[in-house]
Image 1 (tube, helix red, strand yellow):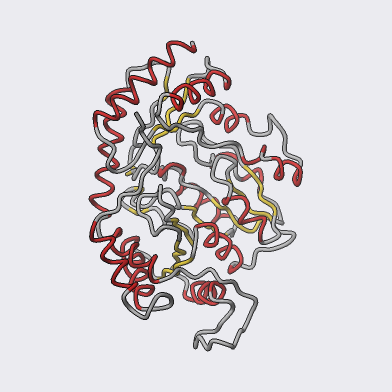
Image 2: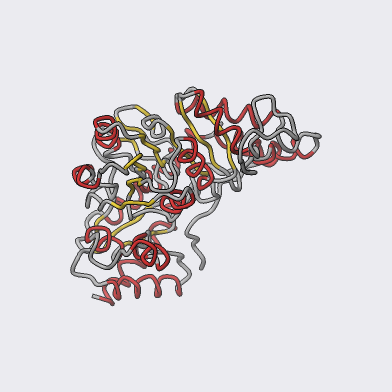
Length: 373
């Protein structure tokens, strides 16, 4: 038996879209790039979209375009993927962590203002696992203190708060398209904004500092090769065209898990918050506090050995060795993040996971929990 943690959903029309580009002379900086950018901006409801080669690159370019650099501080969450912090570090700025809300697992808005000082230039909130709860409160705090918001929506494509899509709240926002995301371009990401100046600057920065005219050997500033090829964009266009179907598939898999696990008192099972729509990047359950990290790790080990891929999501960023060494963070600095991280179990989750496979995963999880209690 093998049940994978994640699998991309590639259909024949995706393959044909990529092959069409491969048969053309326009493999990069061709028509598919602009087509993808326009389609994505329209879907989210933003004025401009800039496609890049990864979500990490997108976050870095957003911060760079906002002028953030050495001596500045950016507030973010310690419970996220590493690039939410390293993109800040890449600019020379300091990531300042704020502990998470124990329900949404997003940055806790109530704890942000105590971390704001004269060096604070922006807030980088993450809609963790596709949950956008709290983004409106974060934006209100940022507005009050004249701070930029770079919205990390890399896990939240299709999520919404009060019918406003994730990615539509910050001055700038970023999505990513690694194969475990809601849609994939293989590798890739996009930047979204309503500010033409910021968008134009990101266009230049992603294309080795070239100006608006795009003259190949004229460079107006220090830039990078963060371009997304037309091959990737063609796949993105095709996948985005199925986004409604994709979100419904993921919602159905989430409902199957909830039906099978909701009555298990040993677990905290995720649900969709009131007023929010979740597009379900992953499905992560948590063990109750009576379980230790060692017991959680044993669950992961036994399930993996049985052919069911599971994982912890996420390890605290402030305890990553190079982050702790650089900024002096230590155990106990963010107790909610640490307690949550010690007890998370990411279950297999992807569009075409079957109901029977979900039952198998849940049955195995319950059996293993009974043995480690």
